[in-house]
Amino acid sequence: MLFNQHAVYLGTPGADQQCPTRAYGRTEAVLVQPEQASVPAGTAELGSNTASFSGPLTATEATGHTVQFTAPGPGVQVTATYGSGEAQIRTILSGARMTAKTSAKAPSVSTPQAVSGKPSTSASGHAAAGSGSSTATVKGTGATGLSLEQGRGLGIDTCTVPSAATMSDWLASPYRVISTYLGGANWACTYGDFTDSWVGQVAAEGWQFIPIWVGPQASCTQLTNTTVIDPSNAAAQGQAEAASAVAAAQEFGYGRGTPIYYDMESYDNSNTACSQATLTFLGAWTAGLHSAGYLSGVYSSAATGIADLAKQYTNSAYQSPDDVWFADWNDNPVLTNPYAPAADWQGAILHQYYGSHDETWGGATLNLDSDVIDAAVAGDPYAAAGGQPTVTDEPAEVSVAPGGNGSTQLKIQAGGQVSVVHWKADPPAGVSVSPAAGTAIVSGSGQVSISLNVTGAATLGSGRYDVPITATANGRQITETFLLVSSGSSVPSSVVLYAADAQSMAIAQAEAQRLALPASNLTGNFETAWADDSSGSDLVIAVGAAASDALFHNACGWTNPAGEAPGHTPFGYPSVPLRSAAGGVFEGADGSSDAATGVLSEQFAQYALAGTVPNENAGRPLGSTTPANTCLGSADVPVQ
Image (cartoon, rainbow, N blue to C red):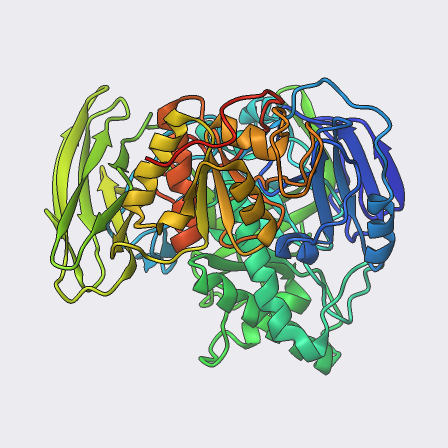
């Protein structure tokens, strides 16, 4: 299935699509399929009584020329792409009508758990994912925060990832590295079986990954049906592409410190103006990735893009990529090339030596390009070592007064093997944590709890302060968690916590106290929550199933400011956490238990307030599930 041709595709794409490796570009196309058991993070969800999409695009969607959403009413999942015809696609999507409702269960959100760490420079010259101290991750159904690794040996490049079963079959091959396309306006293929769960399963078998982004091409490209660089805006475009690529990488579990390679196909580099604009774009791409904590890679023809980059390698004013991947189909798997001097990019080169062809291993046939690699890739360092420890802070938020203190528990859970865990808290000025560092030895299913005392200086101003807590285990960084410290009795915020039953109100109230939220930011009144959500100035977090069901369905038929009939509301929710309010959208913190609901409430609130996520690799994956259409709770629950 390709998005570089006008088409309407109906049905669920197969897990093993045989897409040509040389497919490029995007145009107006639509895929309509039944709602899947899980959907990619970032997929929007419409209300339960509509099939019409007219909302704004996320930055990643706009950059990638792609729209993704689910419509629970008719029970469909839609992917739409466009080239120059965004208006045409919008007209098609906004004109969709629901003729019947489905009784099928709506999907859960497939959300990764990516490591975020502070990059530092390793001996190989690559930025490592962490600064010497970091936390731990836990293996689940998805990716567990893939980290930087040095890939060496042979790899394959396919337009759409093979199924996990095929990847297992291909363990019989000499290859152990595979490209994974994250997206971009000129990627013609589909994700197919590519999810964070696929990444986690395949990584656990020892595969490593080359994340690729296929954005605008050089303005002098000979490819047709492609989006190209605007020479007058090349730097801004490069930065924007980097930001979108990072967002996509995080959705699939590629943590900070890992590389993302830009696919810049061959172009006419005798065109000086075009060549310079392309270099400007790629320099901005590298700068954007570095600022986000990722490594930069560039794939291109050896004689054009790589030759141009090589001329800039010793130019200290130019942001050269960390790794280069040159295409030269000479059928010779070597890492040397006349266009890339041997002294440049040592230990940071990939060579695509054999173009599109079929190979069969383990009984499974793929169409692929072949590569030889000695460069930065992403992988799971624990693939062969078993489970790793996890580190959480519970609670993840603490309120302290100036000169006062609070407390939390740092919990280190063993991952099945003996691990020496070194941890460290890094509080900002005005906040101290005691003890600030330590070492724990865990094994089997054991757990160590460490009491942390958090103190605010007498001069600590009113506000919120993020405290990273990092750790290493067995000489490797594993993840990072964050403790959010609120100072002051009532710190202003646009976050509103809404609960519609007594148990959830207790969870919401405890959360509000730890965040030092004003009294007006906690409510149990349905009409108030409706008004707050409609205002567009407040981000409403529905705590518990009753609150989520009420805002999404209003199955109880409670009185509301808009006079809507029972069973209908104008509200929906995203499948990813939000940093700011968006009218008509709420966050659903509806866990399978009170503890899970508390974790989700912490995650959503902290991300909205600080842009960080606590315990993201040790708790339930961050994301909302579709509320059941059931009357629960009360229209007015008192705040205790």
